[in-house]
Length: 168
Image (cartoon, rainbow, N blue to C red; front, side):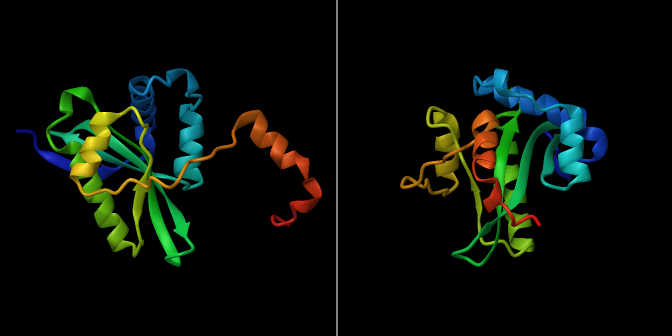
């Protein structure tokens, strides 16, 4: 059995982070949507501190990762953790690394006083859904995720420029 360990990513891990993101995107049939670069990841994760990455290690080798950031619940009146990506390399699946990453994130959330840990999962990804349900995670069936990106995001931002004074 592998020796499980966990550690936060460091700046020099950016190439590994991008490789894992691309592997996850390939698994999700979304590789053509990945426009992230090492420079962007370094800027947003390490320079701006907008996300964190936790690695699962198998005898010192990266077996998987969790990329997460803080969000805020107005109902709870405190921060939560949003898990953007959880991925375990195929050769390490079924060995407890995914569950270990979620345990680590849960411990981080509790240590930081967060009110919840949440994430999204593609509807077709039955193996992951079954895994999350086995851990006691509850699907939010009454909620639908909405998103603005690219040209639609830009158009929305430009549609009422005079209203956007919050940054001043």
